[in-house]
Structure formats: structure tokens, C-alpha cells
Amino acid sequence: RFASTKYDVVVIGGGPGGYIAAIKAAQLGYNTACVEKRGSLGGTCLNVGCIPSKSLLNNTHLYHQIKHDSKHRGIEIAGDVSVNFSTLMAAKDKAVKGLTSGIEMLFKKNGVTYLKGEASFVDEHNINVKPIDGSENLEVEGTNFIVATGSEPTPFPGIEIDEERIVSSTGVLSLKELPKRMSIIGGGIIGLEMASVYARLGTEVTVIEFQSAIGAGMDAEVAKQSQKLLAKQGLNFKLGTKVTKGVREGDVVKIEVEDVKSGKKEELESDVLLVAIGRRPYTKNLDFEKAGLELDNKGRVVIDSELKTKHDHIRVIGDVTFGPMLAHKAEEEGVAAAEYIKHGHGHVNYANIPSVMYTHPEVAWVGLNEQQLKEQGIKYKVGKFPFIANSRAKTNLDTDGFVKFLADAETQRVLGVHIIGANAGEMIAEAGLALEYGASTEDIARTCHAHPTLSEAFKEAALATFDKPLNF
Ligand code: FAD
Image (cartoon, rainbow, N blue to C red):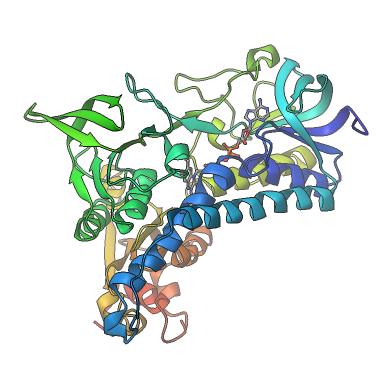
């Protein structure tokens, strides 16, 4: 059925890591195939991750603004504003469909062969592909392999996911009806984004988090501010609390929690329980051991600094191996893997991978946070600028948050940037560029930024690390 069963590069997994690696390998002149078993390209990110969650976040934000934040802007709405839940979900599905089929077009354009099936290693040079249409298995030989099989939600011991009442991040993106009450185990990015979506729609949301702070990995000051603002939006937080039980009884979920410090127990009831305690690498049915690949104690495929396994011709990228589980990290590695094959060298700067939480306000950061700088004994200066003093934020009546720079105490080299505010996710790109080029805060403060923009707050926060800000 396919022109060839031997390829220069065989990519396993068609997520952001795999599909980008396949396109890049083809662009570099390799006869390339990408094997994907889901039936659509784009992996977790496009199908059940980044894209559907951002569709729901964007549209519920719009709804919330129209309903609760429009009158004082001079926008009068004649009738009642309400949500059609199934249309909201359909808009999300449309975005997903458009983007996933867009990758098929990109494959055609770049000459990548798309093998729809599940791959398992036969040995280090051959895989078996079990087509999803039930047709005969196919043996495919690869001169090089790039493994990008991604990740799956980490299960909570003793709590059974049915994707109806007790859901993972996949189920919560496709609920059939709007729940009245939702409990969420995990105050990380995925948990908080989903908490925002449903709270905006009127669901009573409770976030249960074992740690005493939300947003694992965030700068502590930013996390605190974010929690305060989310609480103001109606989210309930139970921090320092562990879940001991979660069972479905008919149409309700009964949850038992315990205060980590005092041991005090409490029972909660919810219509939906979301388990969002993290993700784990996915290597099911891959028969990785037949190719001699090794997993570490967290299930990650072991690789060296050039993304190589013990075989030079098998590289591994994205969520299934080390590093942050983020789509753009997987993509960077996808390009690097193809370039390593072609040129013998590639580049991913792991010290410069931005993180974004797409709540409102957004939270975005890159580089080191204050906790890490203290731990590492690095002397640093802080420069902060609040959006309340930024003309564009004031004009937009959207002034929550601040930009915070952490710069080397002596050289002013940018070490980390942490932003909480509208559009923080877009603004963080400038910080990434600064880190990549080893910029100092003075370099940024002396760069002309357009007025009136939120990015002027970025410039002034940089200035505040070594001089007085001008507008605050
Ligand atoms: P994946 O995207 O998981 O793709 C792996 C693919 O491999 C899958 O499609 C799978 O079907 C396929 N596969 C697995 N085994 C085989 C096999 N044996 N044969 C054939 N195919 C196989 N990241 C961000 O950067 N920004 C965000 O805003 C963001 N939001 C998220 C929201 C949610 C709700 C979730 C769950 C995740 C989010 N992420 C986000 C994380 C992001 O989705 C992942 O980091 C990213 O998808 C990892 O890409 P990957 O290519 O490594 O793996």
C-alpha cells in the first residue's frame, strides 16, 4: 500500500515532537515516514491538550467578560447572556479538526509518508506497524528512528477514571453537560486552566493540592498573586490537603480529603472529579526492549545529551524522555533530532524553555525563579513593574499583575523573567530572546518599546533592576 517499506528516517508518534521531526527530516532531504496510531496527527497537544484547552479558555474568557465586565465599558447587552455548552464544545472540536488536518497537508507538502497505525520494535532496525484500519501488519525498516510517543495522564492510586464523572484532562475537555460542582486534584497548570474554564461558566470549583502553594515551578511570589486573583474569581482552594479517596456513587463523586499538617479529615461531594496530578511517559506496546532501549525509574526513555539511546540511529524526543512536558520543548527537540542525523549537531537550550499558564491573568516565566537563585547561591537583583502603572493596561481596564526581572547582581545579565498579567504568554517571548542572547537588563531598558503597549511594563521592570522606573 505504501511506496516503500524502507525509510531513511522513521518517526514514531505524530505529536508536536514527532510531526515536527518528520517535516524537518523530509526538508533535510530524507525519505521520511511518521507512524501515528491515534487516527489524527498533532498528538496530545492538538487533540486533547494545548489546543482544545485554549479554545475553551479563550471562549469562556470572552463569555465572562461580556457577562461580568462590559457594562462599565459602555457595552449594554439587551437580553441575557448565556452559554450554549454544546456549541462551545463544537467550536473547540472545529479548532482541533482544522489544525490536525492541517498537519496532514504539511506532510503532503513536505513529502512525509503518514503511516496510520501502532508501531512496535521488532529489533533496532525494524518496526512492525499495526494499521488502525485493521489491514495486514506492515514491517518497516528505518536507517534512523526518532521515538516521540509522548505521555499520558498519571493515574491516582485507588481512583478509577471513567471519563464521565471521574475524568482525566482528556475527559474534562469533552464533558457532555456543565457540572454544578467540580473538584480538581492538582493545582498545577492543567488543573488551574480547567478550574478557570468551569468557574467562568458558573461551576463551583474546588482545587485540592497537596503542596502548600499552587503552580508547581512558578516563582513563589507570582504563584501567591495568581492564587489570590483566581480565588477572587470564585475558585476554592484546599492547599496542603491530600485526597484519600474518590469514588463514584451514581451521579455524584464522593471524595475524602485530609489536611496534611493537622490530619483533619473532610468529605466532599462533586458532580465531576478531575484528576490532574501530572503526566507520565508513554511506551505501551512499543516493545522498546527489543531495540535495546532503557527506561529510568520514572518510565522515561534514557538518552544522552544528543537525544541518542545506546544506538546512534535511535533518538528520543518530547514527553517520553527527560525535561519539561511541553509542546514547544518537544518541537525544539524534533528539529534538533533531524539536524543531528543530518549534520551531527543540533541545539536545544534547556535553560530557556518558557512556561505559560493560560488563566486570566496569564502567568508566564522563563529562566530561574527566586527560590532557585537562592538555592544556587547566586546574587541577584529584582526589578518589578506593576500593570496598574502601565498606560495600556489602564486603558484596557485590565491592570492585575506585574513583570518581575531577576538579574545578576553584578553584570545585570537576565537570569529569569516572571510575568503575571494579560498577554503574559506573548510577552515572555522577549524574555526568551534576552536569555538566548545573554542580554543584560540595561540592553532591554535601552531598547525602544512601542507606546502604548503592555511591553512597556516589561521594559520598565528591566530598568527597575538598576535604576528608577519612570512611570511608577
Ligand atoms: P504527544 O503529543 O503525546 O504525542 C505522542 C503521539 O504518539 C500520540 O499521538 C500517540 O498516539 C502516538 N503514539 C504513542 N505510541 C505510539 C506507537 N507505538 N505507535 C504509533 N503512535 C504512537 N504544552 C504546552 O506547551 N502548552 C500548553 O498549553 C499545553 N497544554 C496542555 C493541556 C493539556 C490538557 C494537556 C494534557 C497537555 C498540555 N500540554 C501543553 C502538554 C503537551 O500536550 C505535550 O507536552 C506535548 O503534546 C508533547 O508532545 P510529544 O510529541 O512528545 O507527545
